[in-house]
Image 1 (cartoon, one colour):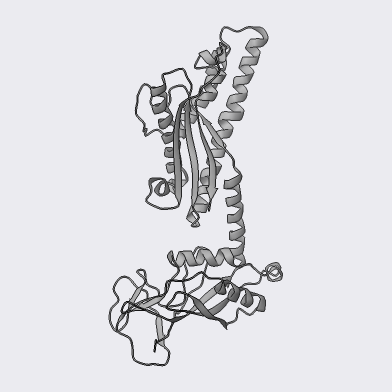
Image 2 (tube, rainbow, N blue to C red):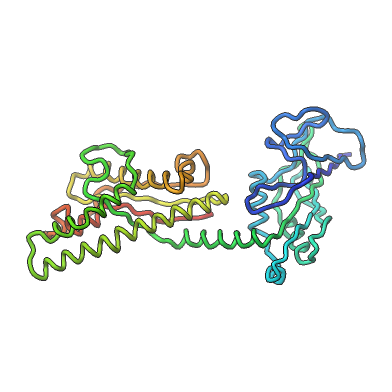
Length: 360
């Protein structure tokens, strides 16, 4: 007959940061050794064997969510619904729910064992645990075992408000739309055919904005009257509305990405690079790649470098699709806007675009 064990910890609570866990002896490597020292770095807990009093000595692997305790925390916080009337009262509480994880991974015998003090919270906690997907079962001596667990489900207004804020941030990331960033001619790293650069976009942006007066003057060079005024106004508007706006939106996106990634969500986006057709196609492909890398370098350094491990792959959760396009194709035209590096069309061609931002 299979033995069923109940594991209780002294202090455990599910929190939005996912720092909490199921209320059994918590192990970093999911294995706890009874009757001796543990292998790995386990925290102390209490183990109670139902129907028997001898202490097991075999290695025991505890039941767990696929993806670990953080995945369980994310599931609970995503699934639970704060009772509306208790939210308006700013009531908080923790309900402890007991469930049995069978050897075949199914969950059964879900029941409340400790009340939060509010029936609505208790009912919601039981509903959430009943909705759990199949879990990885406990094993002892490599044999799957039934095991009873007790799982705290905490309702905290501070957590709820943080959850609402995070939802707004996710919405902001999804709705930010395409971001277009612009570059000076042949920047970064002029006259090279490298695909990579150590230059970051903030420095390129600042230098470009400092050249605003020069670009306005050069764009109108050789023109007179209304044509000159129009060319000057178009370049002024381009600097103030397009170049500056793009950088401001990049800052907002970077801030939002840090928040959602650190909360455990997955993000993906496309980043495409373009160049004006004033150089040859091969050169422009390399230049487009460098422009993409300069923006990613900016994102690595922003917010104290919090995005860097996600961009480099040291941390999972961020997928970036790089797409250097090279030169922008145009219908043949002889306008002054096209034929000089200071012209408005050439300035619009020198860009990268971030789009298709997805949060899951």
